[in-house]
Length: 169
Image (tube, rainbow, N blue to C red; front, side, top):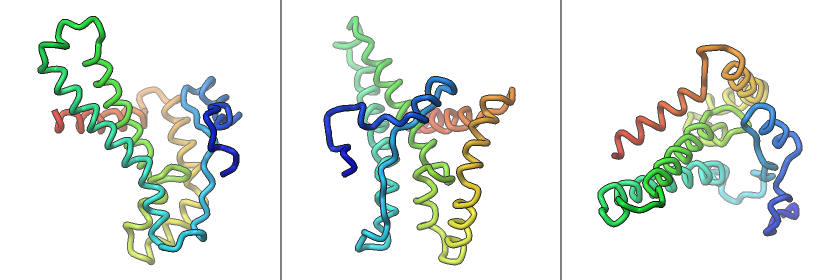
């Protein structure tokens, strides 16, 4: 359990992730250690990796339903609480997290989901490539988004999220 089954949120903080949040605007918590050798089913790694993004997708869809419901409800139309805006932002945030986490480079969840969708020979080549270059590519994308004017990986993610919202609503 690594001592993380607790109500204390400080246990989940990571020093480097916290510093990145302050300096770059994006950070992370301590990663959950997962050993695929402990799984009885060889596809279990796929389900573990997909659990987070699927939850982001489900929460985004739920927020979209609530957003649509409140948008058409006269009861909340005159409310001083901006629930419509809250649900829209919650939906957008969860869709952004879904698309970001599904980028197929390590250490993101997409790097564990994609190999299970590839043929066996491509899977091994992808896993080798991702092990060697995945994290560097992710850091490069984030750095390029931060330092190169006009280039933004976050814009791509946001556009994908907005397209999903357009389709849903």
